[in-house]
Every structure is written in C-alpha cells, then in structure tokens.
Length: 143
Image (cartoon, rainbow, N blue to C red):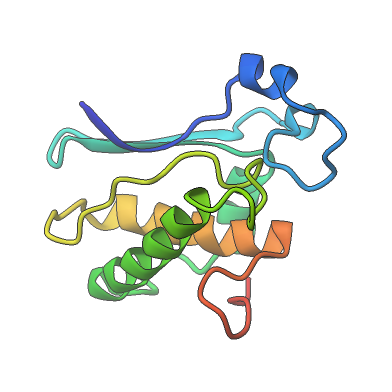
C-alpha cells in the first residue's frame, strides 16, 4: 500500500515535545478507543491514517453523511485544504508547528476514491473547528 496521506501521532514524538500545549492534536490523553481511523482501498492502493482524539466520534455523529457531497466537490476542497495545510507546515515561525507537522502528499491527478476524499475533507473540517484554525480564510466550515 502506498501511504500517501499520514496524520500519525506517535507516542514517542508526543512525549519528546513540549507538553504544555492546550490545543494540540498530540494530546493523546484524550484518546478513546476507535480514535485511530485507517482508510484503505485495494482498488486505489492509497490509505489515510488519522490518529486524532474525538475525530471518529465526530465523524459518526456530526459530519454530513457519506454521499452528501459529490466526489468532485470533495476533491476540489481537498486540493485547496492540502495546499493551505502544506503552506503552514513550511512556515513554523508563523503557524504552530505542533499543529502542522507533516506535509500531505495529495495529487489532484490521482483518483483516491470517495472514501479517502470524504474522510480527508471531514478531517480538515474537524481540525479547523477543534483547534480554531481557518485554512482557507473566510469563515470556518460548520460542523
């Protein structure tokens, strides 16, 4: 499998960094069973690993249901979100490097399938609301 999208929060990294962060995805003490989501598909050979306390519960209870958005809509939004995310990763002096650690390798010419795009898009919505971030300017997307 190609691991092209990775939001992995490793315990060794979490404990080696400053622990006085209130708003950081590294706060693994809030993790609940099921907070690790792996989206993979043999058809597309791509997967996403998201380890984020509360995301799975939010995805099941708050996010719009699968099928609400078209794949084209999700792909267009993900291209913009990934670009904004990667720009922030490259500017640690301006944006919190504890929130924006790793670049995301998302290529618009690859069909990642609906499931990957749906969960990636919803992670961006969740992330912005939870950490009071605004990746695209304007208002933060509603839950």
